Image (cartoon, rainbow, N blue to C red; front, side, top):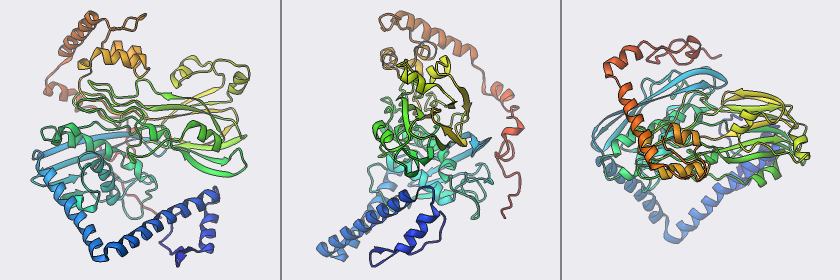
Length: 511
């Protein structure tokens, strides 16, 4: 619902006519609309009451002085922190392959200039705005940079606008991250996904040689087949329209220079986000869970592994039909990037099984698949299988249909050949890493019966891989000779811009 700002209450009371207007405009879930507005208004009013109580106790003069001091302290702290990093120019680039429901490459380019106590963020080279809703305004881009800053580089500073005083943003007008005022921006978060991917990369280079080296952290999960959005009549006959919070509130955390990323840590855009229990979800919605567990190999590989993510398969059970859709920005190109030789996290497909016989198998007490890979490989559940992009257009599910919601793991840190073999074996035992990845990527030999590491065989495998790397090596000039001639297929460049610099390639007219 897009409205100009309106006063929805008077004398601390909500106006019934305006509440009814909003309720009618959100006809798919009116009860949820009313509850949401009342909850937000109540929270805002509680802040008002407590602020007035504090002012009455200490005086308005002291209170405003306190607020001002918070701004001063946060600015001074940010400038002092920035001064401790190395001056220079730092660059990073990220690609995605999905825009809305269309497969097309887009690019986000970030150049950070650090000089003294100031930082300049320059997004020149980012793909142009598009006709769809995957666009952002410049202030939204800056807000996504704040998500990283307040969680890592400025984690111990007061959270206020003061920390932004030493920061300058250059976001070219007409780009994906600074679209025209008439552009649709309802999926601006997805336009800015790559901002939160690029921030850890550029800051890791600035901070590695500083006192904040322990804060150098690879990016958290930033790609998934969620939010899983649904709308329909729940098992109690009420109209609901919502999204499942726990899949993207259980993405993997990025690896650090000294430890693995946190498994199923949270959501990169709300680090305190919580995932409700499966039992709560099943109690309130029309779905049952065929399984929900850790996705093996979802964390980026490295000396320290990215955190793993959650995977779940939903079964429509309580109602005859429901409308669903998912959003995302990539299916084949990894958005996340590891640090210093670490691998990016997994990329995940969307899986749906229409007309499945799951209910019959459950009634018969048959053993059901325990994860999405087993389901895809064995096809032990009958039905029509669809393997789709991360972003799936809206469709109707019928009772008995299955559909996945898979989170994204965190990025890895460092060379996987330097990972402690015992940690790899422990990951295999806990199903965080597959045996295939342990042997073929980490190059760790594990006894099939005991699960223990064969140290001699592991040393031999790793030395063979190091020699193979040397054999594959080439000079930068040799590499660029072929690399510079490569170009994606034309049908993958519809929203990219001109190749390769991503400059605008067409005029967008909005009526």
